Image 1 (cartoon, rainbow, N blue to C red):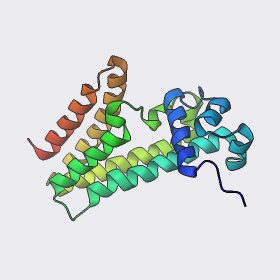
Image 2: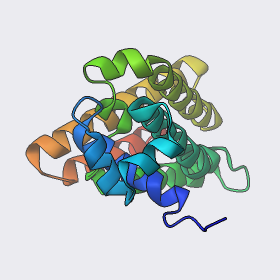
Image 3: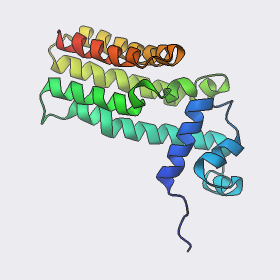
Image 4: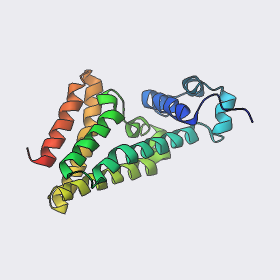
Length: 187
C-alpha cells in the first residue's frame, strides 16, 4: 500500500480553514481540494458523502480539539480552579488564534448549514455551557449563577469574534476573555 501523501490531520486543518472562511454554502469542492492538497477524486474517496461529510469531519475534529485543550483544562483537578479557568481561556485563545479565526458554529450555521448541522451546533454549545457551569460551581457560584455565567461566556466569546472581525480589532476578543476571567474570579 502506498503511503498517504497528505496526512489526515493536515486534511482536517485545510477543510476547517476553508469552512471557517466561506461557510458551508460558500465553499466549493475546488477550494476544499486545494486547501487539502488533494484532487477532487481523492477527496471524494476519503469523504464519499461529499461536502456534508467533510463538514461533519470538521465538527468532530474541532470538538476533539476543544475537549482536549479547553474542557480538560477546566476539569483538571491537579490545578486550582483559578488556574483551570485561566488554562481553559488560554485554550479559547488558541482555538480562535487570539480572535483572528471565525467560530465553526457561526461559519456552518448560515443558510442550509443550520439545518444540516443543527444537532452538532446544539450539542457543542450545550457542552460548552455545561463545562463553564461546572467551573463556576467549583469557583463557589450557586448552580443558577454558574449557569448564567456559562451562558454569558458563550454569548460573549461568540459575539466578540464577530465584533473583532467587523472592526478588525483583536483587542475586543482579548478584553472579552479578561472580562470573563474577572467575572468568574470576582476581580
